[in-house]
Image (cartoon, protein in one colour):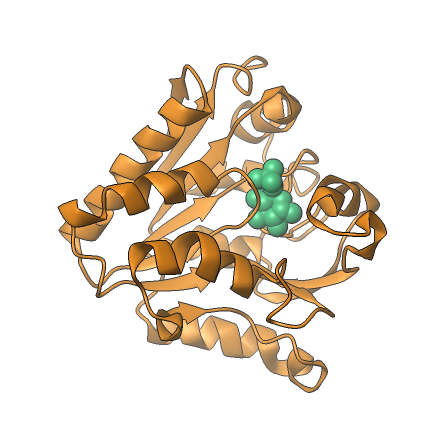
Amino acid sequence: MTEVVIASDEAEGSRLAALIVAAQIRTKPNCVLGVATGSSPLALYEELAAQKRTFDASGIRAFALDEYVGIAPTHPQAYRAVLLRTFMRPLGLNESALSVPAVEPFTLERTGVDYEQRITDAGGIDLQILGIGTDGHIGFNEPGSSLASLTRVKTLTSQTRADNARFFDPPDSVPVHCVTQGIGTILRAKHLLLLAFGETKARALAAAVEGPVTASVPASAIQLHPHVTVVVDEAAAREL
Ligand code: GLP
């Protein structure tokens, strides 16, 4: 079932989303969280850190949704670095509690299988936080990705590279490749929490929530999942 929560703005939506994540941690202190990057979950992560005295986060483990290939793990825009900075450290969590797909050249052939195994060994992801791309991608599963796909190496589309150029200097240094959890991987998480804020997301969000389930809109696969919470602001909900 998909529940859509329409908040007045991003700040309110992020507060609501933080309540959901905090409740998950209180219910299962050793839970496994799937953590997205991008701008959508940033206010949620800040809100969660602000509330950290109301729950014990010390037992959680986190799995990144995706990672760029071709930049060092210490690059400020590498998703490992971003997640340490925006999610792990503010919650007082150690780097060892964060798993990110391996992206060194010699690991790429096995990285998908290895990452799937690590998720399985951790007991599966309890709550997966997701953003949505303007082209309807989730993780880095671009339009055309198989709805059954698992973690693997992908090439970014020019649209996604353009969307993410704002994080890079110079803007055209956005990596070309990535490793992403597949749509099938995402669907195995027990609960999906998808965030979308701003009018640039309105069209993709409406297609994901109300359109046909299709590989042309990877986020539409959430309709196949039994437990989805979509938190949006009024601008992103405009085409619902
Ligand atoms: C990025 C990430 C996704 C993210 C999406 C939306 O490319 N790989 O995980 O959800 O695109 O990004 P943003 O939240 O910045 O709009």
